[in-house]
Length: 155
Image (cartoon, rainbow, N blue to C red; front, side, top):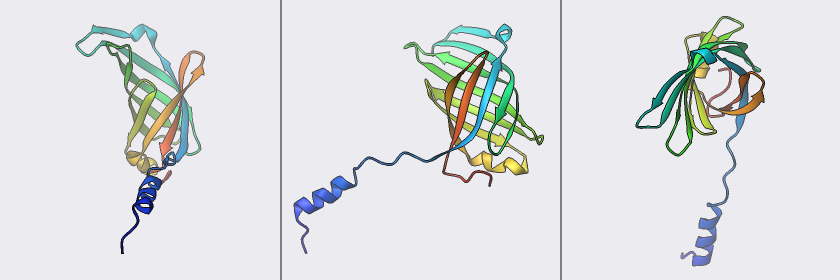
């Protein structure tokens, strides 16, 4: 049986419809404070202007975990086009005494987060990829962190 060409084309075009956006689950909101006195201007490199911004603390809260941000460092790079490239590691200390390392990497406002922990309760975070949106906070950098739903929150 031959499928008419118009039917075949319409089936092919229907598969090109706009995809649904990926579902996201809110993980936590964090306010990170920076130690301006410890900022290290590495200067102009072959990749762009590199500055190291020390994270001195903060707080975070979400439906499955909350606590304080301990410390970290943002090795920010502004490339020769003026685009900021984030490369950050910071540590979260939960109210139930778990330590979670957060790695944030991205270009401009497109930043993804990955996590590393040995705490059994939060082991599921080791398989999570999350994205963050920034928000305005006086005296800090505010981020709302959202998990992509490739893994199940909490286990």
